[in-house]
Length: 221
Image (cartoon, rainbow, N blue to C red; front, top):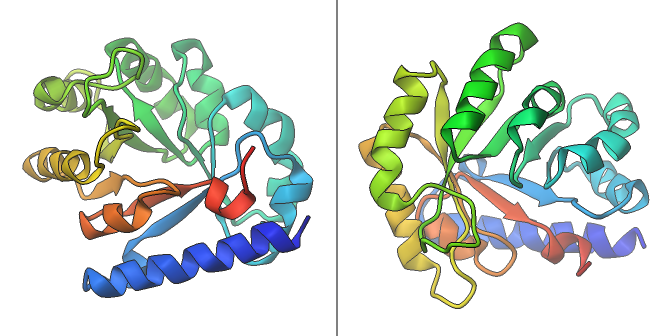
């Protein structure tokens, strides 16, 4: 099993380096988040051994169940929550994750504003933009993004690091990445969580600072 994910990681690293070169960007300007959701420790350990130190999970409970021993043996690892977060799980999420990519409603902002100061942890927050305005998908509609970001900052006292988007599967991702980058720029946000296994090279061309890659590393679930 170990050869697969390690080879996958190496191939993804090569592709990121190539995309950065084409976009005339420094490789260090892009953080690779290895999406380990649904994979057990035996699949994650070889990737840790190969030097990967940033991982993404979708659910607080799943991450709590498998990551504590891995973090104990690899304390320099950062965990990013890339899936939806229930407000009542905010405290647990803040305790475990170094970044939350799915800030998408005022009730969650309220919960985070309560638990973050008491936690003593600096957790990076990304606002999720629903660029395709898909009803089944979480995120703020593009036309509501500016007001929501302002509310995060002014009403709730949250520091927003950047934006995240997941383009519709049946549409070209480039316009969605361009829209997200435009919203980030006018709101003074430096970080962009954009791009997955199928389109991360395109995302890098549009300024992604964080790419969330799962199946290209770990294989299909």
